[in-house]
Length: 285
Image 1 (cartoon, rainbow, N blue to C red):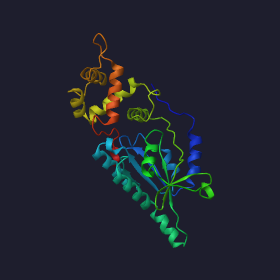
Image 2 (image 1 turned 60 degrees about the vertical axis):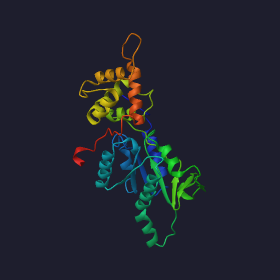
Image 3 (image 1 turned 90 degrees about the vertical axis):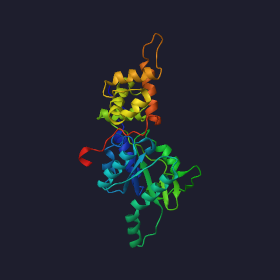
Image 4 (image 1 turned 180 degrees about the vertical axis):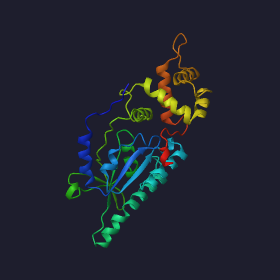
């Protein structure tokens, strides 16, 4: 079953993003730290050409720490600053704010040399739907965030939120709609919960998740579900996990639907441990 999500909106969304970008100084691309490759939209690099940019690896508390560091190094080699974050971690919030100001440093220096009046740095967070953008924005802005008045010029009619002294966030950023030409990426987005359950078929998504877990986290499968041979067919692994956790129908048959839901919930909540599904491209390691 192919996963198709929000078809036909790419052009409209692209125009919306371009319009908003005129009003900001720094753009932050939000990715899921468990699937940095799958949660990235290739449109971003095109749209942000020439604009200071950082990458946020969100939900880092659910991702493999070593892999997250590898992804940070990957972006550093590409000339893009990256920061790993977990909403609720005050230290991560400070890291994020510091990185934004560093990204805006060259621009602020130009203003100073030209004798221009320094204003707050304006930031917008870009990301595909359901990768935690709203939660992140609420976290970094705080519940008592002061809303500034509408700013003249390109920003007329747009509302800004004061994140800290000298840093404002556009609180109505456009979203990027993914076009799923890469079904592996789509399956992994579904596994992490970025795609709603009524859009994908668990019979397709869970086997893909089991394949990756068998390769990257065999110990977790053994400890949680009693699976000894992680190299077995994903359907066999699913049956073993279902039996171990009591997903049984009247008569003794495996309740596969219940087992699939259980595995998805265990992975998404971190009960299987901190796992990253996307590896850094081999040529970049």
